Length: 307
Image (cartoon, rainbow, N blue to C red; front, side, top):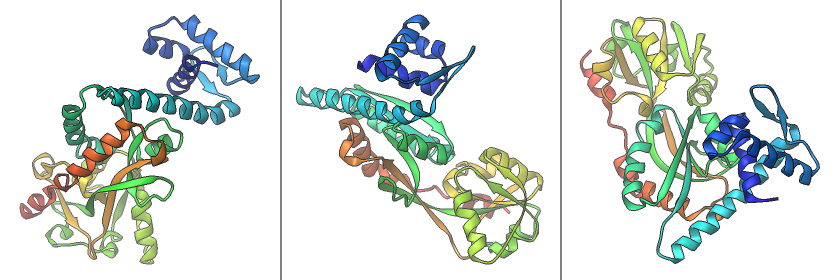
């Protein structure tokens, strides 16, 4: 078993194909196939089911993929620690990011500062839904990820706290309110966000003994903003998921705080801090130092005042 074989195995699994893995590695597809067959022969099990245009993991392949990532992660940590001894900061850092909250409002500022301090460290950013980022951390597909806190499955560090905001069309009777109750949001169609907020929003209604009428479940925040602007329903979205120029981009939309207020915490998570690479620890430190500057800019206040 070699590190190259493990790297090829993980890449084929992530990209779901031999040709895509070969292209990323800069080698032939036959070399990828040969390395994987050699690994399967040594392990005595089939790791990949080969299809004409794709590849998928077997059950045992899914189990061993986590181990392969652990081994490769430890190898990368050793390389980075050796480079640190020589006064260098090198290596690769894999980051998981979800939605506008982290991808637009948190990650750019943190990575810009990180790149200034550690230009020798390459960043690989995977973007997905919040539950996908959690899964990537568990599977060690990423070294560190942005998550909604608390999450006791991981070692975490809080970064920012924002509010959950009610979204209403500007012409709606509720648009003149200073804050909106959950009961008021049950008076019409409700657009449920699946973009990292459903796990927070649904318990709010349930704990209050309320059940909104939910004809729509939407995973993209931009779609929710468009639908509310058109008057298709009301919704709740996290403050950091809103555009910074909300009033300019969506003049027919008003964002208002809930009554009583509901907050949300977002931070960084790793599977096990004891196995962090130097690059991961450096990213944590930069993010923590920048946390006071990452607070929401309250773009909704301007939109509300324009009502």
